[in-house]
Image 1 (cartoon, rainbow, N blue to C red):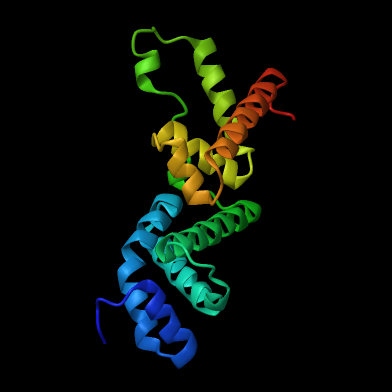
Image 2 (cartoon, rainbow, N blue to C red):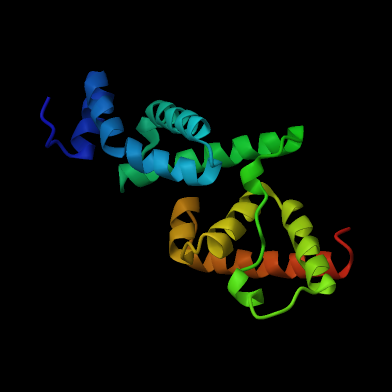
Length: 186
């Protein structure tokens, strides 16, 4: 099979000719992109591999509903949704991942300050409030504040507009502020 075929040509071969080799070529083209996204989300190589596999299976099943655009981006969004659902299931079952426990402040912000018990309590309250957010909102916080992912990239990963992500971040910050002010009971 010709490796120079476009995504659209390969998808046509899968849909019209039921050609499994054409879909394998699509998987080869985009598996690293999808896996990288899954790994950033899941923080575990095995989980990321599972999410990647599940995303391609779902993409294959839904291939007829693909409406054009970048196929790799489409599969990456599918992987992101699968990963978020898996993380949410873990959260509901009470499973805790070591990687999910992170420092909630930039060290540069506190480097010049001496240790302060009140500051420590505020950081703990913030961390506690973040863990009470829905998984997707926690992910947005992790990407933007911990990993420095630009808003445009977050929007792309979640299949939303940049303005939508800005509004969500604003609302998340407001909720966190209220939770901290009212003792995390909201």
